[in-house]
Image (cartoon, rainbow, N blue to C red):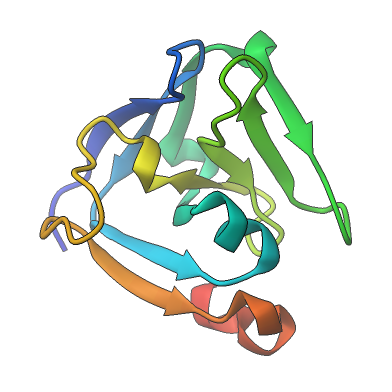
Length: 128
């Protein structure tokens, strides 16, 4: 594991900006209904490793099913930069595609780990 560093990111239009403290460049590729449709690649971090630096007023929230997870998105451009996930309700799940340093699928700096979110209850312990 490397030393933690802050990485900045945001939505497409720039209304929402955040930073996240990362020590390992690993993300979860989930196949649940919402992640698959959004193309969300999740980096789960504790609350103290996430800071919204701009745009709280621009954010909207979508909840479904158990209504535990808060899927946040920019009301201007529609991009989903992060959520408060059901698996880690006190943390954040950051969409690595919204990080300024993200270079696309296959970026050698990042490692993807598959997660079977279609069978969430059977697999959630693997990401806790």
